[in-house]
Image (cartoon, rainbow, N blue to C red; front, side, top):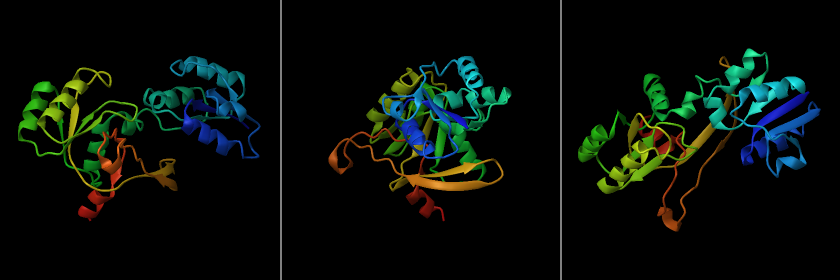
Length: 238
């Protein structure tokens, strides 16, 4: 079968490394790929925001499966678009991708289905946000709601840091912000637990941790990945 992997990062390189080991793979493309993928797949220089161009390439080259790595095209609906043309895609649709694209959406899902998560408050603008931090307990977590490439999260030790976070977010540092998320600070280990699901069943395929502080002793700033599970939080709620 012919397979195309969409993306240009280390994640896509790792996916290509695994796929190429399969005897079922006849031809492997990476769109647009990078220097690492070049040795194991055919890199195709293509604009990932141009879904029609991607679709035309897939059809022309008789690609049987498209694997989407980056969050942005998923959030923008590439899976939905390609599936309209009967193209098989590995990647969540636009609705499910809100779990990555909107931190508030994810928190509301957790609340609705009683999934342990930190207590949170949503505010609509700078005025509401500044009012909230006057009475808030510190440390405090402040998050930009929109997709922020793994950024957009502040651990604020005091009010001045919180004010800066609010101003950064509403002034467009991570793109247009219509809402902001405030969470209780939780101390503990972070872990991402990965599954594949078809909507009816699921299969576990690994876990990972992010270690991003730039200074020894956890003193540096930390661009926390938003989709995380704090084991401390889980133990406190069970």
